[in-house]
Amino acid sequence: MEEYPTPIRIILLLKKNKYMSLEELASSLSITKMAVLNHITVLEQNGSVGRKTVKKNVGRPSYIFYATENADRNLGNVSDAMLDDFMNFMKITGHEKIIEEFLKDRYSKVKSEYAGDMVGKDLDAKVRKLALLRQESGYYPELKKSQENYEMVEYNCPILAISKHFGIACSMETNMFENVLDAEVKSTHRQVNGYGACRFLISKNGKE
Image 1 (cartoon, rainbow, N blue to C red):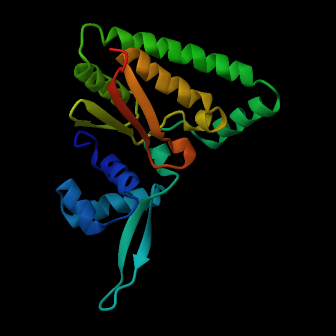
Image 2: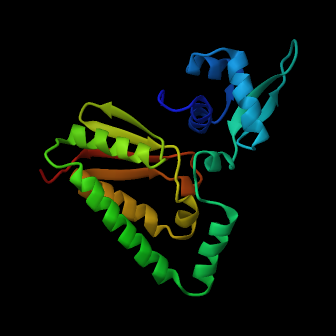
Image 3: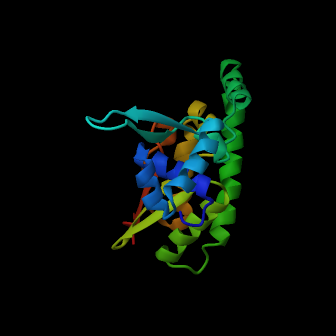
């Protein structure tokens, strides 16, 4: 997460932790509270961040900050109102199959691209390469390893508007991960279901 610009890191931290104070953000980012506040001000102006008042028994009330629904657009989502309307139009006019065929074609191409980068790599190298590829595509992943298992959390979904209407996109994505990694992949959280991120648990293929 350290490689991302500070405004993006603020949004990712808020999506990860839901609510954070100015002090907590400054500590996590290793910058001053004033520097955080300057970024927060801009993010509030563009609608990416909101704040809530926390009353104290003594002294002035303080604030905690959170990522709004508009924060995803600041991360590069294409889930704008027009695309959402288009997806709804395709459904109500009976053209779901066209979108499903498009998704199948898209994931087939992505799988081929990803697979080419996995040749000759062990699972550890494959997972790290996958995280890098997802980062380049705007998914803002965070990767953790525990013994031989991996947890990949993606804080942005560039195709959220499509996934909201066509849940098959999520299952196709998970299957694509399994194919290119030759591993077991379980999806435990999805932004389309109201979570702040998509979470994948990756482990060695039980068939090995």
